[in-house]
Image (cartoon, rainbow, N blue to C red):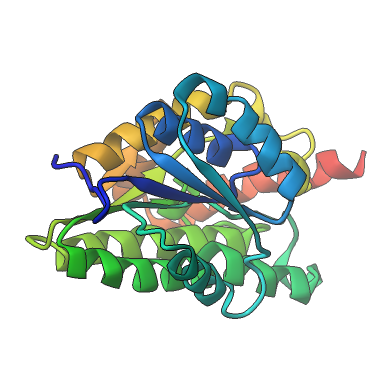
Length: 271
C-alpha cells in the first residue's frame, strides 16, 4: 500500500475520541509508524497524557483539538481548524463513539440524539470533508470504528447497534466508490474491549466483558487493516462468529441473542 504523504513530505493522522481506550492506542500506532498526529476529543488534559506516552519515543509532532463531536457541524470545525493549521490529513481515524444501555422508549432522548451525532453523523461528515481532500490528492486512508453490534438488531441498546450497523454499511459502500482513486476506507469491527465502554454505557455485570480484548490489540489489528486497505477488519473470534451467525440465523433469533445479553446488563446495573 502506497504511503499517504502530504505536499510538504509529512504524514498526519487525525484520530477522534483520542483521550483513551482504542483511540489512544490507534494514535500510538500512528506515532510509532512515523506519522504526526492530531488528537481530537473533549478533554485536553487527557489528550496531553495520551501523547506523553509516545512523543518522546518517536519524536513525532502532536497537536490537540478539544472538540465535542456531539455538537452540530463539529466535523466542519475540525476540518476548518486543520486547514487553518496547514495540516494535510493523510489518514483519518473516526474512533469517537459511545453506547447507552436502556429500552429505547425509556431512554433519555438527548443522549440517544447525541449518540447518533457522534457515532454516525460526525463520522460521515468527517469522511466527506477529509475524503474529498484525499481524493483530490490521489491518496489517503480512512478507518471507521464499527462493532460486532453491526451484525444484528440490539434490543435495549437499539440506537447503538443501529449506528454501528450503519457505519459498517456506509464504510463498505464508500470503499467501493473510491476504488481506483488512491483512497481506501476500512471498517473496524471489534468485539468486547477493555476501554471503559461498558461503564459509560451502564452495562455493569455483562458477561460480554468477561474476556475482553485489549484496546492495544484491537488498535494494532485495525491500524494494520487500514494500512493494507482492507474494507472490513474482523479483529476477534467474537466478531468472526457473530458475522457468520448473522448470515445463517433468522434476524429474530439474532435479536433474541442480543436482547438476552443486554437484558442481563440491565439487571446487573440495578444491583
